[in-house]
Image (cartoon, rainbow, N blue to C red; front, side, top):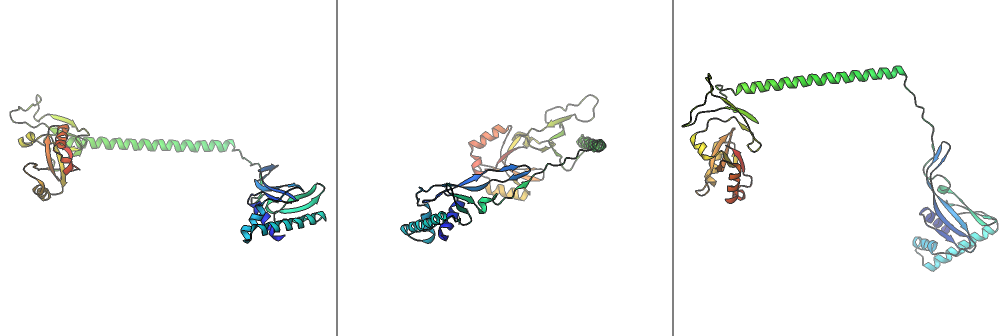
Length: 320
């Protein structure tokens, strides 16, 4: 009987249906959560029993015994038949039979009845919850007024802080703009070029071109030049000599080195008669260029025709 009880309990806990010949069928069922007053019970598993003296044995219990005990199917079927006969005999004598921790099987007028036990007789592993209404305390009018006053004070303080920050930022921006414009006025020399997205340069006279001077002025006129994204960030231009003017406004740079010696060594190693390289010092760097031209499109087209990008994949175009 111990073997049968152990396997019946295991199968019911695993959610399997169990049929005992001449006794009935045990079926695992789920019980949903329930609410009784202020007590909430969690969903759990239970067992339903259908008594039937005409129930025929299936192979599920015998198969479970065979897997556990390592016996053949015929021997396991004999064990099930013998233990079920013992259960029926005890029920006929009015005794109660415990099926392990699954519950108790007892005699009744309809044949037999099953009372779930163990985890099937409780709410499983979850305890019921005792739910009680929460007491919500309402704030008084004085507390609401005090909280509102504190909120307004914090808001006003934040607005004043933002206003002071904006005023300081505007003053700094104006001062920086005035300083920059003053530094770029004609006649003021600077050792280091100013790097910015815009610059002020003086119009220098060119050969065979008269200098345009405003009436009554003693200094050359000022012109504000805005660099486009294609031009990049460039300092204020100094007067170019004739060689640079004839060479083109843009160059295709193939290397940017830190010193003149490195640039000259690079040119000596890679420059050829068919593919000459030049050196352009700018912004503390020594740039080696391969092509020059008046427009970016013209340089790019020539670079593709001469297959420069194969030799220098990182080549790029900048303004001279």
